[in-house]
Length: 198
Image (tube, rainbow, N blue to C red):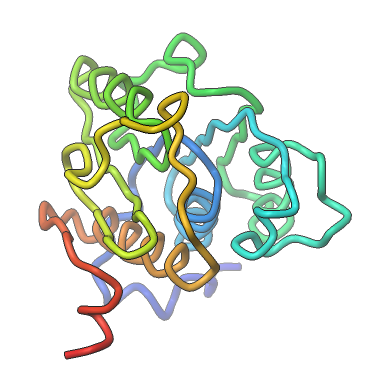
């Protein structure tokens, strides 16, 4: 295992981080998994949702996982890939009373409700840690240190159903992980069309 991360040593990645991931749907699932695969010091994730059929195009899990909690599943998957990883999946919505938020470096918000995003940003700001909103609305990609401009919360129950499949979820997750590991303050506001149709 001493050679596990040899090929990334020259990339100057900062893996000495403790990360909170809120929401482990397509983006959060892949983001948390990639952080663990890169050897990040600690990852905790929160999600009360169970896997539904419409989640499977974005999650690399078998059909037998339907009905199981996403955070629990992700913790089990990560522990199989990286047994030494400090990774905890909490099978409920983000609760700042469960962990000491100020001990973490960044809260990555991959939730779909605007009110939840506002609350999470406030918690991160109050604890003095970084905040990253990673998301997309089917076309527009946001990887930002603030709330997304394209979402206003004006949806039924504040929840936005987003057209999606695996590629945008993995692209946004990978770019978010790069932002974290490179200590970048850069933000990405673009559309998928702009990325591929120059």
